[in-house]
Image 1 (cartoon, rainbow, N blue to C red):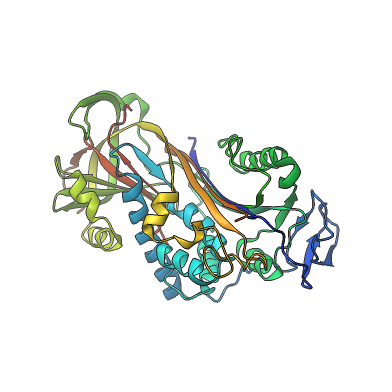
Image 2: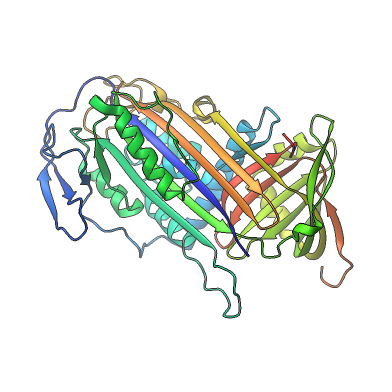
Length: 455
């Protein structure tokens, strides 16, 4: 039995606007590039005495025993869910197949928040619905990552490969740019990330290739050439990368021999002939007002939540989605034996998020900075000269008899300036919304909609 992987990559590209920062007197820790060599601390002057190819990292280990409370974690997860649904509704407004990873988008923007100040920071925090005050978000986000990547031991008699979730962060910065040590410390302590030094100013293309190679390696070759030519240029100063890798199969897999073509009724009112997987088993099921919801568990601490609105009520139900809707529908669920017919599907989504994020409330980060207005990323460098130029996102999902495979990438470009009953038949032959959830925390890793599996 094989299990299909989900890959997500998030990138935040930051560039300087026009001038270099003044010389500073803080120190920056520069670990040696080869394993086993000791780290050294050097003055962070302008330009810093560092070289392309080194890794600059604060001299702290990642915090693996945080003081984040369960209440704080629950508050952040609830905020993440609100952000996920609002972002999803905006991204899916055109009525097409849509797939994205709010988890990774939030992770990249939270790392960016570490260097934001003033109104720029406030807008990011409000839009992402942090749920905790100030820099506590980094501690709680670290705790969330640690819990998501802690995989319970499978039963001794379970011969299946255990579920895997891996999260990696890295930064890629202009080798002679003066990043603040406080920023580096936050990223090292909470995101286990240092800055890989590259030379955007004179060879942006080489830096782009190097970052893409790292992304490809972290995603087991599933995300190739993530950053297109021309996105990184000589004004780029920093690229923040978050990658999440998820691999799981269904707890109750579908038999390929039972898959057969059938009719799917599309959102546009047409019909498509697509392969339907037939199987099912015991799973939580809710019959709500105008929708059905069921939860298909993976072999591990994760599940796919599927919401199937009644015919003609898709937009109505989609508009109601929020954390309260999900919590109420989940609380009303009973465990039923489901005789399920579920379509196989595979598609890619790609869209720009800059306008969406502005509409959601992140405005100042996109404004060219002046001395007292526009983007304020002075938590990264002393000079007020960085701003977000663009945000793009791409995602791929494939669902078959064995499990789920998905890939996603986001770039934030910042520039200088009831049991015992007979089986309940559930046929998902009309548009539906689906989410991939880390079950023990309730964190939504992915969210999407299928309006036509054949497109």
